[in-house]
Every structure is written in C-alpha cells, then in structure tokens.
Length: 112
Image (cartoon, rainbow, N blue to C red; front, side, top):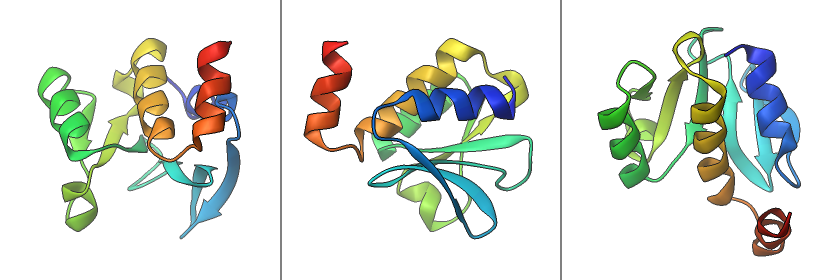
C-alpha cells in the first residue's frame, strides 16, 4: 500500500474531498475520516469507533494501532501503509467514511 493507493481509495468514496489539517493531508466527507502523514509518511489514520478500532487492532496488530493519547481512545487508528493491502485499507477507510458521511451519500454508495 502506498500513499497514492490510500489517497485513491479515500477519494473514491462519495462526497470525499482532500484538504489539509495541521500539516497533514486529510480526507473529509463533511468531517475528517482519514489522514495521511501522521505521525510520519509511513502511516495513514482512519477515524473509527473504539469498538471497530479494538477489533482491527486485535485482528491485524502489524497494520493497525491506536493513535497515542486521547484521540486514540476515541477511535483514531494508525494504519501502517507498508504492511497493509488494498482490501484491508478499503474496508477500514469505508468504515471510517461511514462514520462521518451523510445518510444520502451512504445510500448512493450502497446502491452502486
């Protein structure tokens, strides 16, 4: 998985746009659901629920880890790009996107 792969997947989700946030690239569908480049270029971040985070960290600890501090406790989850495959990243990004995307966007996504 490369930064380009992560970006392509994030931007393929309906209503997603790329912006920047505190010096990193972020992806939004109304609100931020993912970032690239934090804490460094080796990582992406997906905004999950704490339950989804716990499940992914337990299932794939070489790929996923909680962000340190309070954001991590709320579900912010690091994704190690080099260790991740396209299907796993697509799943994680989709779950993160669903957490912030408007219901109409979700219906359009489900209908395709």
